[in-house]
Structure formats: C-alpha cells, structure tokens
Image (cartoon, rainbow, N blue to C red; front, side, top):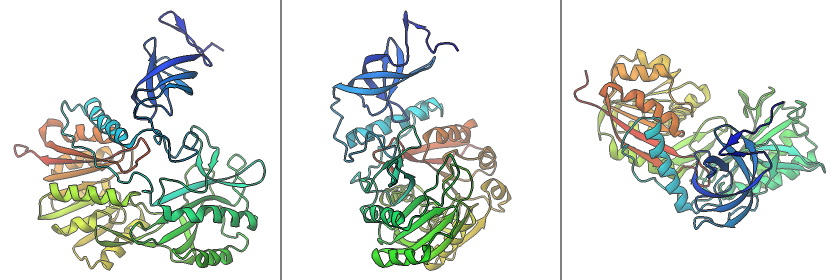
Length: 464
C-alpha cells in the first residue's frame, strides 16, 4: 500500500506529524482554516486568529485535516463554551466563538458562496438577522440512545465524526422546557429494561428519543423511535409521564424497523394524550406532530416572515407555496392574496396544514398532496408570487425550468443551504428573466455553522 505522503515544497507530510498553525479563516463546514507551507489545513474547534498546535490526522492532495492539541495564543473572538461537552459533542460546532463573530462569518460565507457558485458579482446581501439570546432557541431535539460499557443508558448527540453518543442531561441550545425530561426519561427506560437498539447488530427495541416543544405555548410532545410497540408496560409508563410532566400533551411511538440511518419510520402511534402539540406562530395557531417539519427557531422564523411581508406586494391575486409543510408561511401570507395554493408531498404534513387553516378560519387556501414538479406545470393561472422552501438539496431542475416558463412576478426562495440556493439562483436569473432584489440571511442555528437565507427575485419587465 502506498504511503499517504508526497512532496509539498520539499516537505513530506505524514499523519501524526505536529505543526504550529495560524487560523486565518473559517470554512462552511465550521472548521477553522490555516496553512502550512501553502497547504490548507482544516482544524475543528478553532477560530480566525487562533495560533494553535495541531496533529495532522488526514493527508489529501488538496488539503489536510488536523486535531487541535493546544491553543498557543487564543483569538480575540474565542469565548468559553456554555456547554461542558462542547468540544466533544457534534450538536454544535461554534460554542467557542463569540456570537457577534459567528454572525460575521455567516454573512461573509453567504456573500462568498453566492459569488463562487451563483456567479453573482456583487450579490445584494442584507445584514443577517440574529437570534437573541443565542441559546435555548431549538424547539425540537432528537437524541440517539446507546448503552455504555457499564450498562448505563446514554442519550445525547454523536461525538464529532463518529456514531458514539456523548451523554447529556441538558443542552444549552434546546428550549429550557425540554431539559427536565431527558434525565428522568433515561432513568425510567433503564428501570423498565427496554433494550437499546444496537446499530451494528440491528438488535434492540428503542432507537431515539424525540422531544418537541411549542415555544409560545409550552406544550411538549414526546416520541420514542422504536422497532416495535410491544415494549413492556409502554402504555402504563406513557400515562405516568403524562402525570409527571404537566406540559406533556402526548406520548407517541414512531416505528422504524429498517436497518438505516434515517431516524423516523413511516408510521407513528399515539400511546397517551394527543398526537400533536399546539404552537402560536405569527399570531396563528398550529398543530405540530413529531414527524412533520416545522422551523426549529420560532422567533427568528417570525422575523424572516416579517422580511417577506415587507418585500412582497401588499395585495396580489395568487400565491403558490411550494413545499408548504404544515403551512408555516402559507397561513400568514395567504392574507395578502385573494387565493393561495399550498403544495406538500408528505401526507401527514398536508393534513396538518388543512387543520391549521381551518382552526384559524382561513378559507382562501387550496391544499394539494403532490410533488411540486408534478403539480406546478399544471396550474391554470400564472401565480403572482411563488414561495419555495425546499429540502437542503434544493429544487428539482424541472421546478426551476417550469418557473422560467410560467414566470411568476415574484419568487421567494427560502433555503437552509447556501450552496444549493446559489446554484438555483444562477439558473433562475439566466437570460435576464429574473433580477435578484436582495438576499436576507437569518441565523436560525446559532452555535452551529448552518445559516438560513431568503432570496427575493422579481421578474424583469423586459422579459418575454
């Protein structure tokens, strides 16, 4: 087997070698970036301005990866993490970075990505919307479970770069209303003797704990992800949890029998209480299940909605909300148009969206359980506004082509991955059909490297 080394400026780098590095940037992955002899090195848990002692752990032709051994001189942007396992847990990447600098990094990365991938020379990017405070913002958490070598149940997030669970009893980025449940439920599972799922052997009964809270209502929904629902005393324990935790409105069991890394299966049973919690978003009441998508940062999602309302016309005839989910943005935006069409391919989500419209007495929304690429070309009327909020992979190419053909006046593209947003913006703006008015970044995910954006496009009046 050939050695993983080669000549680079007369030096043969080898795994295990230790070097001193000045961190000069932060990558989209969240890792700090430095150089040795012009060779790029990515180092987790570092920030611009750190001078660090690093062990090289991976050698590639274009870059290397290093493990932080010692901070020789800390960056002025470095702070003490709020969590004692922040350097181990994979849930956050940036608790060691001052929040003001996190915002600066994300702002810069949005601009750079739009320039590099979207081929936009001077992208109109507005200042990022912050989350204040930058902790306790997540309204949902899903914890993998694992049995320790001493027979104790662990629940937490995976250690960085592994499938080993870092055990936690509370988390500073989760809504504090979720903290009392974690330690107590772990103890109860231990007493009940439920078998923890073992990934390699594909054996066991319980795989994950999932908790969701209504940030505005305080209602909590607990979901166990299990391989079957015949767990000993499951119903009895679910009712005990309902009595023990006053804000708990439902205990559910999601069944996932497959040998897969996918967290949720397709079927969820209600064991006690309700299958949903209620949340208030932008003044509207929503039913949310554990297996349907809703923005994890309620307050900052509301701030992004306000930006949409500021930018879009105050009245229009037809809005199409593609990838509508449970109607998060559909409901408030529907009140600015005569008619709204909401499209969602997940049956559970579209059913909740219908319920949410009904309980808010909204009657001008039509809901369709369909793929966007299938329904959008069949519209009988050209929409004035199309709202896109696709998964991380972005829009299917056929959706982009259909939009370029039907040419709605306004497009709002909400994205949690700037690279796919930039790719799709380049396609939409080809041939001058659309003009990018502005991009509004929003920090939905403080303490991590992820960033949300809303891009606002308007059809050029000269377009055919």
